[in-house]
Length: 418
Image 1: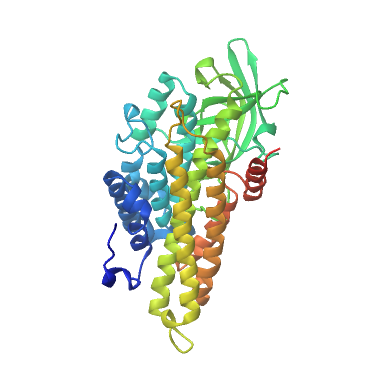
Image 2: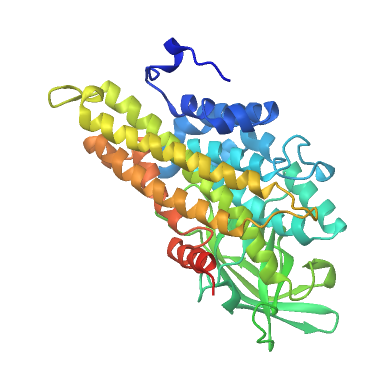
């Protein structure tokens, strides 16, 4: 029997309890994280608070650039990459990637977006690439010699991967010639290489007509590759996003990831991992929103006295904290599941859980910002306070890595069955 000490357990803790206090006291942190993972969490949060958080608003408004911050974030490039290809031996799992993205987003969603671009480039290669591809691209990615991006989203069908059509390839002799475009490609204007998902011209067999290629990008001076002007986005403004176009870009068999026709399976598996990282970023933004609103209400007076003593503020902040706690448990439960092997030694299927975690986190973030911004009053309507940046970054998490409504329909259909 576990004995409770009444003077420690009978009363709630006294605040202010910031997001780091809640995280450190969670079952995830105290029970399920290894000592190494607790250290990683603390390390990334510390760097994020020192390097990114003071400039959250300046990064959004263009008065600071992400490129200025990347040297101090370089130490995390090896997280989630196998040690044999330059990754950090202690931190090769999806849980480690979730820890990284949660805490980077705490300081700047744009910074975590840069790592998203690199990670989406790396994941198909880790899943299905050859030994040569892994050694070449993953090693250079970790060393900072290259930046990667991921060309999946179609100009015509968005989240409907099986019906992509705007980038096609045809075999001509010993080479494969790619023509067409992809959109919403994070890191595209600064990338050296990209993985792209192309439909075989003349092949209408859904799910088996998509192939993944690695092709040189703009910063590798690739012939026929164009990254359009960076998009003027609502959020993620310090992150570079654009349409890419390929005009008679040639690839060889050595540039194919997996086999001809494997693209759909590679895409949906990559997205399952990507959804956990996106969900983690939403959690990081929620934690930052909680901290910002606690700091604000403790410094300001409301009608009738100090704002932090007003019941309405306390009620709303409690709801924010509840959402943070629930979102953390949902995400890390799925991340640990994604590291679990079944009786055959294969990774347990976690696609439905990843989609639900991403959807839950995205919706929770919308609720959090809609509670936190009004508590800032008029100050929340200016880009002088980080809550305003979080507010405009938040809608991305209902869209990125699969639109929320599409995910909900898909997972609901999976649950009820045919």
